[in-house]
Length: 362
Image (cartoon, rainbow, N blue to C red; front, side, top):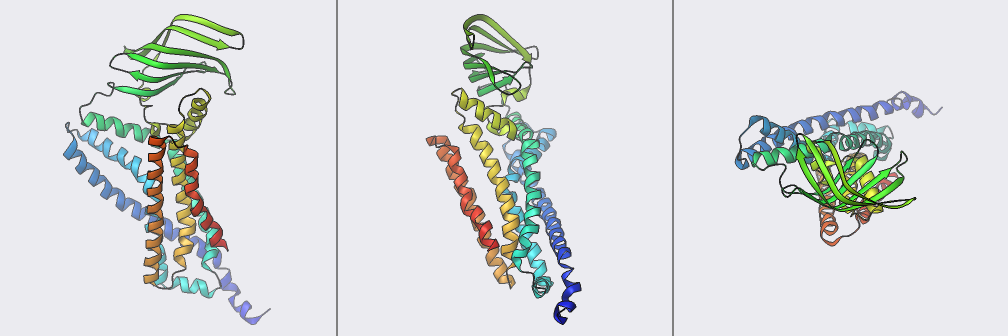
């Protein structure tokens, strides 16, 4: 064996440890940055609440502050991760650990796969959050905001009302006027366990009221279509337990990822505009992708810095890339909402960033 290789062999065994050590440094600094920014953000939200609220309630204020943080902070998680990456690489530079790593023949790009695993772990956690806790946080944030403004939650108009009965019947109304107790543009769909339609019905107008903790929907006339033919039914009445969450569907952010997929497919199949649900789904997935990209590509890019000045320059370049991504998403959302552009074109926003994965491995 080459004497030099023999001498460096024990050091080479330290390489996997270096990967784990760098990942541990990064995760610790991520928690530190996240904790610090969360405290500052909570204080800012509380100040905003005190200046805007017409009803001063400590419980409502705390719920509003926590839910607001839960709604908006996740979308800026890539910037938090970038700050943690900067602190991690700066520590490695100051301790001359990066120089030691390079001396062992480990190039910055060799950290790509280990940090791709770290990024995938964080992206998976974010996806689970979007599926489980985020819809509740978005709804709670809206409810507490209305309560602080002394606005009745059950007043006004609800768009795209959906309800699924225990027997697999989906009830949809394009518009519900809670003040007039009327619902318009109704569609009823009965599906089997495989989500295949059994029958379809149209209800142009129905009565929609809240009585005794229950929602009552009365349809004076309904035409039901099935493979057996068309049938006219009159004076149908549906009663189901009232839940404030049922009247939150005006905002797509109140749905989980799985619900957004189902609603997008069901809406498209029956002529309801699927763009709001599809764009909300895509927007969350873009943030998940950006989280993965920031951790894996960002660490390799920053680790290539020789001096702290170069590190600062590269960090600023990555920050500019992230801000450009957010700006592009915001601009594209305007086109989706105002012009009716298909949300699927928004996937093109990720193409330049995905190309960086191939560049860093070359």
